[in-house]
Image 1 (spheres, rainbow, N blue to C red):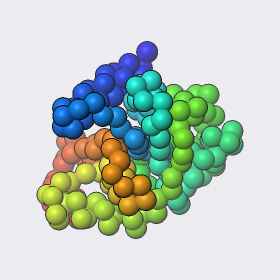
Image 2: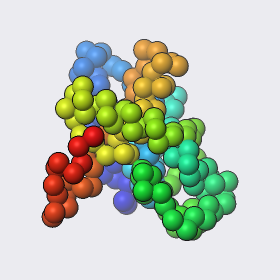
Image 3: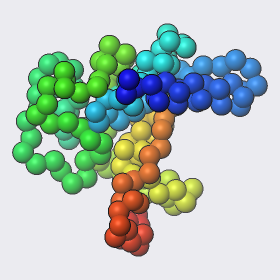
Length: 176
């Protein structure tokens, strides 16, 4: 099954958390963008098996709430995807054609472009990390949740931006 590698990612993350904490510990939140649904569903399903009280939070662009529409069984028609959109939000596809398990998603949070762009810039300036829009969006939501619900273990996955793998990659073009 396509989700099995993500089960392993969840297991490895839990093992690392326990090693860091020095005692048994669980994640309280898993936050992820949604493309085809395989990552959030695979990691989320396994984390729910380990800790049924974990909250799985999906993120969608506030400018294009396609995931919310899909969860409701609707399709958000959009002729053109804005350039600053993150993730591979599917358009014009019924949810049955995707690999999303909506049953494990506890909440869908929206984020505006300005918020993830600010986090992307801060991460680069303060930590020297260059990440893509999806990662910046996940981190922004994680920061928001950490302010609302303190002292919780939050799992996110930082993805390399796709432009790092282009043949014509020119780093100076992508400086924030």
